[in-house]
Amino acid sequence: KFILGIESSCDDTSAAVISNTKILANVTANQDIHREFGGVVPELASRAHQQNIVPVVDAALKKSGISSNQLSAIAFTSGPGLMGSLLVGTSFAKSMAMALNIPLIEVNHMQAHILAHFIENEGMETPPFPFLCLTVSGGHTQIVKVNDHFEYVLLGETIDDAAGEAFDKAAKIMGLPYPGGPLIDKYAQLGDSSKFSFNKPRMDEYNFSFSGLKTSILYYLQKEVKTNPNFVEENLNDLCASIQRTIMEILFDKLEKASADTGIKHIAIAGGVSANSALRKGLKERENILGWKPYIPSFEFCTDNGAMIAVSGYFKFLKQNFSEIDVLAQARKKLNAE
Ligand code: ATP
Ligand code: FE
Image 1 (cartoon, rainbow, N blue to C red):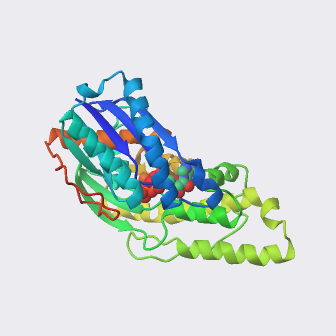
Image 2 (image 1 turned 60 degrees about the vertical axis):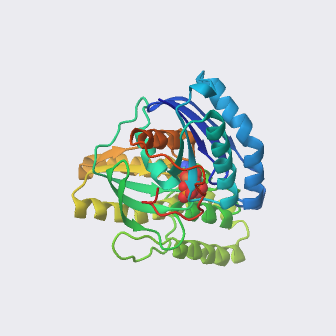
């Protein structure tokens, strides 16, 4: 089966062509326009998707060597995400499926981040069911028990900011451009993670909270900058390392609890923050300490990508789970929704 997957939920326009679970092409256009605004501007994002979608899909098809009339179905992200962004991919996918007279398959973006683990890829192992997945992205932080490709139990999630947001907001406070997560990761590698300490939340069960950390960083830096205006520049590496350590402690604390309580040691990570080097390293370390079997996606499948949408579409195709042509994009969508 050849499936085209289209992703446009936030600020990346991405298209992929797969043959069953094997990637033939995965093409992404990032939007640099948001850098100067310190975050994604929804109106600008949808305009950029509109500009990018035709060339990106064309490039993916060309690279795959598959012509559009060989496609078996078109999968697209129907939510959650920014409505203006989702609408571009949704409308495009509908028109193309209609023109080619092939099935249309809506994909839940948060399921797709998890299902990225089923992309056939050298050096990436597929987790056996049931496994736990820590999904950490720009908009979500969830611990999910994955019983099957489409059966999820949401054990816990953030009650305020997402982990990626915590990285990005902390970076913004320090004057770094958006998205700050990868920059904090980079500077942290040169810093001392025990230099500064910030507040950690006390949360019930498997839930997370990151807004207190952001406030703690803001107040601390405001105080220090009063006596030394160059405080952030002079301590950037140590600040990044300390902030990253704190976020990792918050994440691993809950993930360890979930693993201990469920007895599940097959542990996957997904979403943009799963590109973080400390998270990847921390997971590998727990292989020896806790007997975990870690599943870590390749970098290109951590942040938003068409491949994860295409592979999710493939599993829905196997179940003949197709969407009607009047299917709607949904900005808010629960993990277990179609
Ligand atoms: P969602 O999937 O919740 O709708 P999204 O699609 O915008 O949100 P992703 O593309 O999955 O999110 O991830 C983007 C986030 O990942 C950003 O917050 C970014 O800062 C973060 N991120 C990417 N690389 C790293 C890294 N190396 N370290 C920390 N954070 C990172
Ligand atoms: Fe995402």
